[in-house]
Length: 218
Image (cartoon, rainbow, N blue to C red):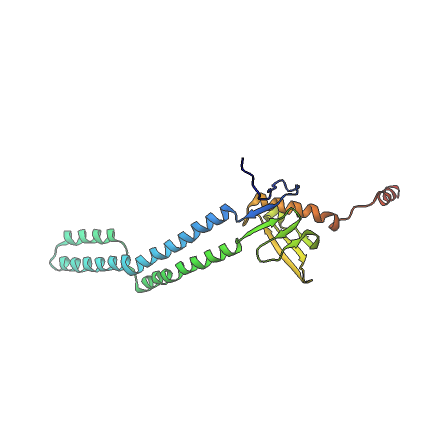
C-alpha cells in the first residue's frame, strides 16, 4: 500500500484541507489554438504576398500578351478561350495588396507570440489555499485569511471574478483577483467559498439575541 504525504485537496469549499486551482485547461487550450491560428495566418499571408499572388500576376500578364496577339491576328475564339483561362487564374493583385500581405506576414506571428506570452503569464502558477487558511496567489505574498480587509464580489455571480483586498506583512494594502475562467473553476470556486465563509462574520456582523428581541418588540 502506498502512502501519500501530499496534503488533501478539498473541493467542497467548506472542509479544512488544502485547495489548489491551477491554470484552467479550457483557457490554456483555447489560447494555444488562437496563437497557432494567428501564426498560421501570418505565414499564409506571407506566402500570398511573396509567392502566390505574384505568380498569379505573372500568369495573368502572360495570358494578356497571348490574348492581344490572338486579337491582332483576328482569332476571336482563341481570345475568348484565353479570357476564360484568365478568369480561372483569379484577379490581378496590386502592389498595395502585395505590400499589405507582407505587412501581415511580419506583424501577425510576433503578435501571436506576444499574446501567447501574456496569456501564459496571467495564468501562471496556481491559487492555493492551505489547510491553515493562508491564501497563495501568483504575484502576491502569502495572505492569511485574517489579514483580508475586503472581498469585492460584485462580478462573481456574472463573471466569476472576485477581488480580495488584504494587508501585507509590511502593512501595505494589496489586492488580488480570483478568476474562475483563467484558473480551474471548481477549485477556484471552492477557494472563494472558503474565503467568503471566513470573512462573512467580519463583513456582516450578526445581531446578538438581545438586540434582535428588542428590535422585534419595537
